[in-house]
Length: 100
Image 1 (cartoon, helix red, strand yellow):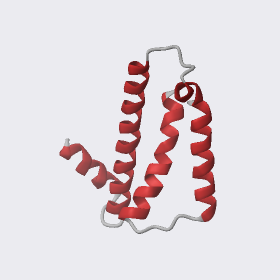
Image 2 (tube, helix red, strand yellow):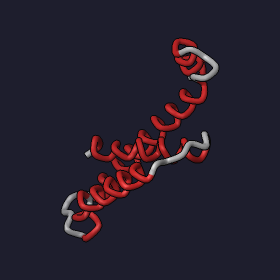
Image 3 (tube, one colour):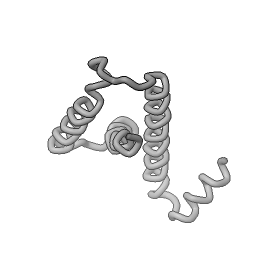
């Protein structure tokens, strides 16, 4: 389920690029994102409709962890993309390692 949830990372990356890097999102990309969201709604339908018989707190904790991971990856990719114009890839990696 985590792998399915990580599929939202490209959506976060595209939205971050649009907001922070002033990139354009093509119409076809919007269509693909709509299909992605529709697929996620279909996948999580048992949870939304109340037919899920597991522990909801565990499910939602996992979803939150997965969304934080997707957002973290997207933030890293956006920072890397903006730094790539000024630094080479090994220097970008060094910046991230030193910031930890």
